[in-house]
Image 1 (cartoon, rainbow, N blue to C red):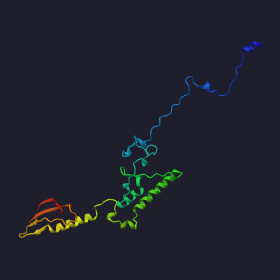
Image 2 (cartoon, one colour):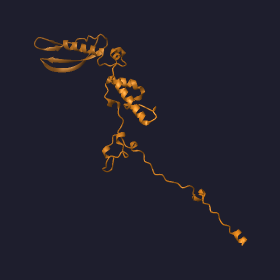
Image 3 (cartoon, helix red, strand yellow):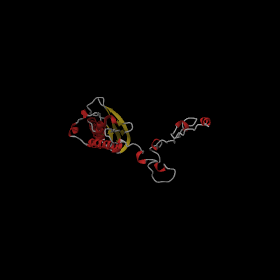
Image 4 (cartoon, rainbow, N blue to C red):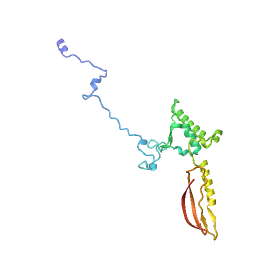
Length: 220
C-alpha cells in the first residue's frame, strides 16, 4: 500500500497567480489602440465656409469645430492706429512684430498659472496700445532734421515746390490784344540746382482748351 502511495503522489494546489501559465505561446497579448485623428484646427483652413462644416444640420458643438479659436490671427492693422501711434508701438515692441504677416507676438511665462499668463499678456497689450496713443511734449519739438526717415508730405521741400508751382500758375497766362492768351515759359525760382519739377501747361485760345500737356522744367 505504501508503494502505491509513493507512485501516486498528490499534486500541490497553487492559488497564487502565475504569469507564465497565463501567457500565450506567441508572447504577450497585444492590445490594439484606437486611431486618434488629428485636431480639426490642423486640417481646416481659416477661410473656409464655416456654416457648412457639418454634413447635416445641427447645433453648434465646440468639440467638433472650435470656431471662435480657429478663424485666423488678429492683425495689427485691426487696431486702426495712426502713423504716430503705429510708429511708437513698433518702437516699443521691437523684434516682437512680424511685418510680413502684420502680427504682434507677446510671450508670457513668468506666472505659475496659465490664466495668470493670459491676463498678464492682455495687460501688456493694453498698456502698449494706450502708450502708443500718448504724445509727450518733447515729441512736438522734433524738427525735420530729427526725423528717422524722410517724409515728403508737409516737408520744406514740398512747400517750396508748391510755392514755385503757384507762382508759375499766376505768371504763365498773359493776355494779348484780340482776346487771345498764350503761354510764356518761366524758370521755377527754386534755390536748388538740378531740381526738376513737373508743371502742367495748358494752352488756351479764346477761352477754349486746346492741348493740355506735361513739360519738365529744369532749374538753372
